[in-house]
Every structure is written in structure tokens, then in C-alpha cells.
Length: 173
Image 1 (tube, rainbow, N blue to C red):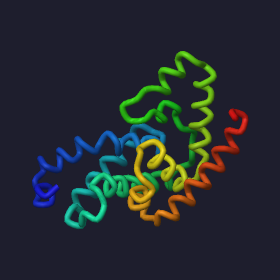
Image 2 (image 1 turned 180 degrees about the vertical axis):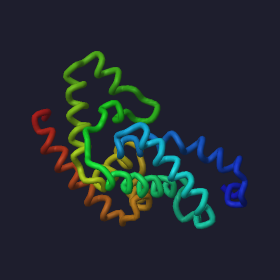
Image 3 (image 1 turned 90 degrees about the vertical axis):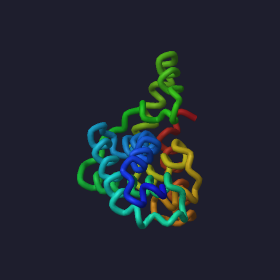
């Protein structure tokens, strides 16, 4: 990070390589479109490069990058109508448990499709809070920093998301 702050493009390239896949997964789940997700991640890294001197180290680098990506994803979502989420996007990093179980158990495949649709129906901030904490594994404090909210606000968004998801998935209880 120090080298990147001094203008070292190779050092910033290492940051992109290290954090790019996680940012892409998050943004892809938010915008639900491969091409748009690539564009949003690219815009996020351009914004990060331009404002790298403002990174003060109070949060982790990944939290700072998730924050930029979250802002860019919300901008993209404001410009278009919502559509269903691809259920394959629910896999955790490095795991394909949903894909494996969906192939072997059609009932689970239907459940994950309905879960993806329920997530797609959530308001953007609720979906972002849920994805960052439940899928990407950020703490509430880290998600709050990334979403530019207080930890209490993130907990509130998560609570509302859980209520909505529970209601929408009631048949699966």
C-alpha cells in the first residue's frame, strides 16, 4: 500500500490482483450482471487509484475497497430496474457447495433459486449488508465502514433483511 500511495503502478496492480476477485463477487451479487459487475469493479479501482492518498489506514484496505465498490454498485443500481439474482452467486469464496448440492438435490436448487430471488427483492442497503456479512464474512464494523453507516445501522439493515428473507422463505421452514 505504501508503494501504491507513492504512485507505484505495479504495487497497485498487486492490490487489484489480491482484492479484485472478492470485489467482483460482491459487486456481481449486487448488480446481478457480469458485464456491469466488471465495469463497476473497474470504476471502483480507478476511484481507489485516484483517491489512494486519502486512505488513512483507519480501516483495512479491503474494507475501504468494498466501500468504494458498494458506492459504485448502488450508483449502477439506481440507473436501472431490479431483476432476479443468479442463484450461483450465493457460493462462498472458494466453495461450490451450492452448485454441488443443486446438482445432487433438486429441492436445494429450488431453495437457492428462491433465496436468490428473495435477496434480489431486498432494498440495496439491506442486500449489501447481508452479502458483506453473511457471504463475504466481514464483521458488522467492517461492513459499516464499507457501507458508510454506523454498526447499529448495519445491524438494523441485517435485522430487516432477515425478517424479509424469513417471510419470503417461510415455506422452507
